[in-house]
Length: 106
Picture 1: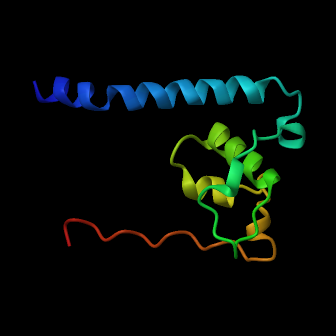
Picture 2 (picture 1 turned 135 degrees about the vertical axis):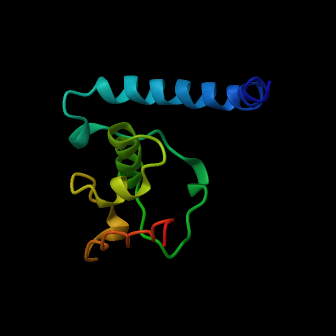
């Protein structure tokens, strides 16, 4: 019963996410060389952007390409992918790998 309630509660958002990822996949796969030619649809008003962060329409496209390549919520993989040269990261050294998490046994 608990599983059915969870599916009922989260099912609509999961379905919306899957449909959005399918549309993204279809749009990207129409390009013979998407890392060179794919353009993101416009995002009016630059929603969620801090004015001090350098971000361009090309970065929007790179972010979508990163989601397509690495998957939803793969933040570090998208950020660290050398095929995705985000303008806000230009001139910065790559971030070090995350520190290992302590084991539960001590």
